[in-house]
Length: 430
Image (cartoon, rainbow, N blue to C red; front, side, top):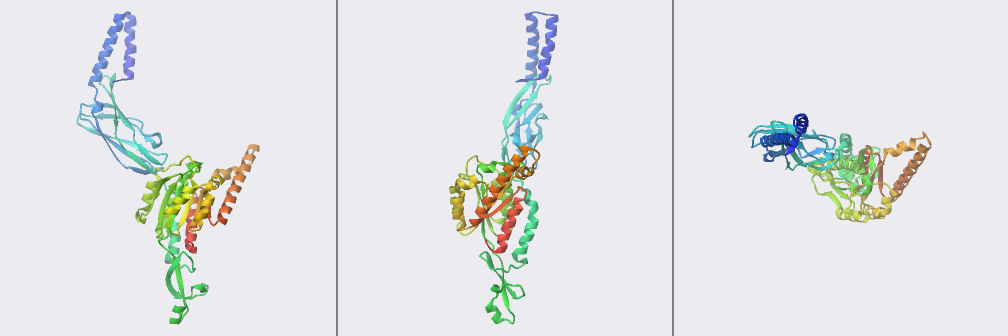
């Protein structure tokens, strides 16, 4: 049983006749008895929320930044029910409205809609549905909670999708629309044609030339069916916020754009999320189902507040990349990360694979470096310049070790990383 504010108000007014007409214990007992009887009758006549049958329907996935509506159907097998319903969700689900009025006739059903505007990736699971009914007098009622399971998976937003058409156009130029006239480890024979000025003489096919009246050259195109392994470092440094989102979210966005372009190029793309253990993995998925599989695997992955096990990460990459592959490691470009053993492990990877490191730069550093308003701002600028110099030194060190480094702001990292992949593809270095 639950009491309403009206019951308290009636009790307050009931104290007036007691004080004016019957200032005694009998007067108090009389008024209290009448109020208790009215509350009892009101409770008995209120609808029974425990008898309700509830059922959910609606989408089970939504991209971060978008909204989705989940419907809750309320079936009433008992007497007419009038009251309030509260559909509880975690705060990060952004559920609204907080509560809704319901009026369900006997044997009828009503549908209430809850709008979700999630603010974080991951699985958002519904909590209890609480229904409170009120009797005809509005003094008291009944309340019951129902567990109606439903989970909405909040997927990465893939905001870099706007760069996809331009990168696919560049890919078409590489993939046979414009012949690549260089030899390389990552190119395969395409066709024969007549020699023109400017062609690489190493591409001349002397056997074909001997059979033809003109000098013939071989044209090459980027190989297909190469292996691209994208590795997301989900350790402590990935939890740092850059702008309005964690570094991990920006790394996921870059991974999705690269995977989309690489799959269109005919390459096999796998994903590995790792800190001290494998948090998520996608392997052997066909190109037609690759992006849905990636966003579904990435959605529940959160940064772990532990240092990444660099040796374990390298061992896992070696196990999953059996032959020469392009390994794209999205991690933080900080001395602590490399000193933890990653620098030594990269030597093992570069002897067998082509390695690219993508790092998310903090735009706040550039803002601090440009500030000169007062002494505090000057000190901040000096710290920012020092941090920038350290990142540059680390990038130079990695480059000398045979690692290609892409260090860019969150919005610039996805296209920059994909452009680096296309450059390697064009040069036949995959």
